[in-house]
Image (cartoon, rainbow, N blue to C red):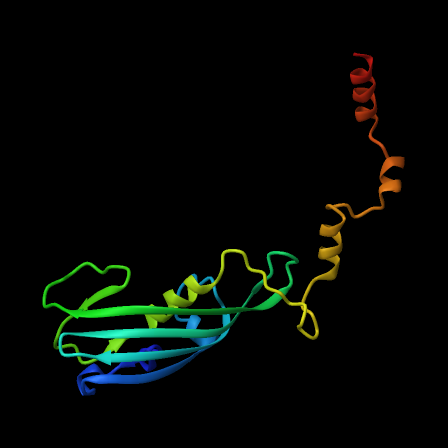
Length: 180
């Protein structure tokens, strides 16, 4: 049995007009996609399905969190994501190339599986830089040691100790540059 069958909409059984669907997206959903950049999530996807006689208009609205590693401090965080996407479904009996927001299906199709589109929209909603304002989180998920390291300009030791352990090669190079 297809594990993504719950994301199929029975288009033949629906009358023309607007229909509402909701999908809860979690770890089990992403396990069905090979090499998924997302492993865990808690996302609610609301789908407004407008069935018309000549096409379908699907409006996806997603909101929730994905579990990822913070790009600032490397701690595991629940990164908030939200997005809205629109997909047009047109009818064609011939093989048509898909576009970014338009797909083609056979007019006799019994159902439309939207799992692939939900997956793509969630992946696109994850920002390239994975950080967020976590100041109000209790407890704050930040890796404090990494943040201290970054605030010291990448130095783990005190500057005074660093000067005591000077590299003799650099000392000799400094002497050469001072002679000129």
